[in-house]
Length: 361
Image (cartoon, rainbow, N blue to C red; front, side, top):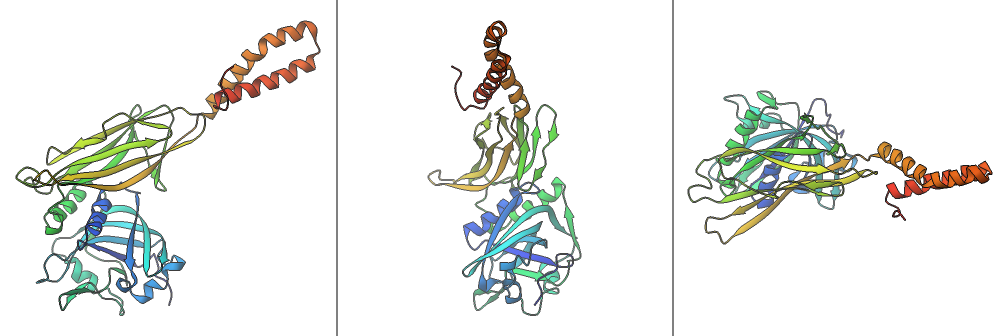
């Protein structure tokens, strides 16, 4: 059996609300910026054999995927597929009876009016696969399926209204009644230039000695949530690690149905390249106030460029200042070869000072 072809097939990746972790996976998918990376896990029994056998060889890599939530909250009706976001499969691996699929999220998925996602997907199921369904009170079927071709009647959209439409649909469902808000990291901005920083290969590459801000939009699907006896929450956001310093509080209160939060941080001017993490999560408090749960959602790598050119210039200046007195002495006493040797030594000493390998004497 040949692996799925990324050009003409779509991998359907489902996550349900059967467990809190599965539900949180959907919240994370909607929270990540475009280009953010995540992974889903599936047991072998939830993957068709013709797909599972190709996972050790990255048989799904470069395939386009549709991440969708599966509403199984009511056994009196068939499980309902709620499209969330398109993605690109990066790689896969097996760990015993488990499959791990890593992907990079893209546009939001919105269906045309009147299109039933489950019905459309069922028409494109391979012969050996079946969508999740109820069977004697138990959920059967596959959660990771390579459809025979791309779906029709579905739109791939980048705009903010599409994100709001998807989370509005999710928030109205029973599985998310304890989720007081959804959020989305829209972009990271270099403050002085007011330019967006692209997310490349799962990381932001930043300039040294700059102030950046992360723009995060949040939305409560129901204005009653968190205001009329429902749970309420806070957004947890921080930039931590070498080369960065957070400038705003880590705990951001969600005190309105919708808003934009801004997280500021500063990069340092170290000579060598530095790495840090931009982390996001949620803290949810139940109405009684005596139960609080913390959800760590995702983190993105921050790569802060080094200041090698500036550092070398400073090293030369320090070296010259160290060598100057000796040059004057040698100028009168000679020979010049000593001046050259001393100059090189002073340059090395200046480099050691600048790059933090030794202290100034």
